[in-house]
Image (cartoon, rainbow, N blue to C red; front, side, top):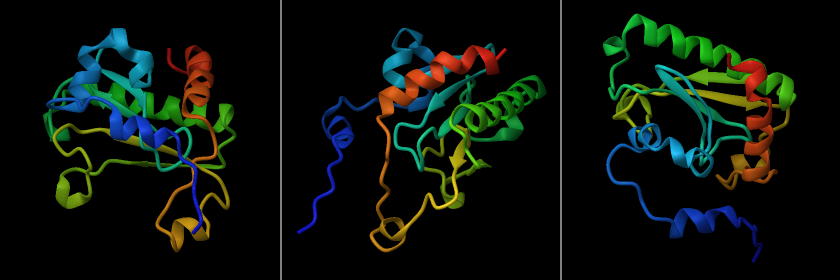
Length: 163
């Protein structure tokens, strides 16, 4: 039998589960930004690393306002979110040398949202060859970098991108 060592999964299975909306919890607990992976906070939204990423550096831009409908967001909020997505994209390209970036929102369970009750934008760095047989055949992702080290690297660079 082959074994895939994935120590970061231990935190997932043993940590205390957040009650209610996870994104509202993150917004309401700025004192826990490091633990929660928040890279940047602003008046209307925040940027957080995805705790269960598609690829290293996968971030999300999340409005502070709880809603599952983008049409309920004020234009000011929408514009700020859009700006932060643009800045996060630049950051991933320059800091992580991402060769491409996937951007997207899944609005509702029917559209594939994992957390459907609170809209959020995905900013996913991509590299040529970042999927291989283990993703395709084994339906498994290999995460090639320590989450905490990557978080620190992005936080150290964040002031150059989020202004």
